[in-house]
Amino acid sequence: MKHLKAYKLFENLNNPIRIEQFLAEINFPPELRPQVESWWNQNRAEIRIHHFNFSSPQPIAGVFLGVDEIAINKRLPMPPHIKLFLALHESGHCNQHRDGRFMAGYYDTVVTGNKPEFLRAYTELEIDANDYAFNSLREMGLERLYQFEEPRLRGNQGAGEMVWRMMSADIARLNPVDFIDLLKKQIL
Image 1 (spheres, rainbow, N blue to C red):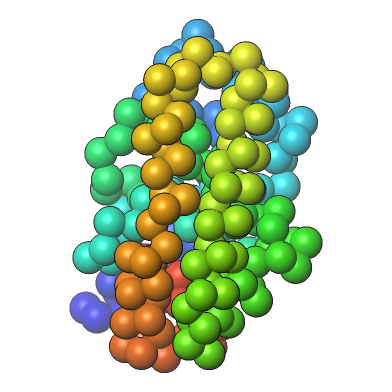
Image 2 (cartoon, rainbow, N blue to C red):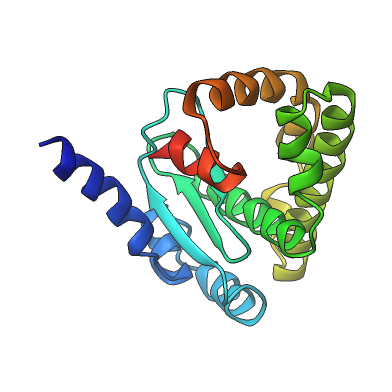
């Protein structure tokens, strides 16, 4: 039974969904889907989306799993437009990882115990991913859906202390080989 459960969890990463299916699964308004689908397929077609229930006891809403892969937690209740924002935000982290800007500041600093550098890098990387998501939404013409929620959605930029504690504990407990391994161990 244990092996079947592990296989079922890893199956989530073997079956990415297209943006059209993701929007349907999150119940994104049908009248707005064409503009999102068109933008995504022109600008983010390489990004593989996984949408499943994370097994983490932590309230992890989404993660990036490499240069072209994101996972969004199906279990956490969020309005559809917030899940779209989250997918864009995580795809922004894919850009950072592809550009070589992510691992040294976000993960390596926790492993080496450099909290001040982690907090600086964390804030910078979260601002950048949020900017990417909001700029993308503007390009899609959807800024009106988010105009009153932007300050709340940017709240993650100030969560560095909490993330430091969670990552430090999870690195000690899970013994990952790198950040992507940590993320997979956290959500699977």
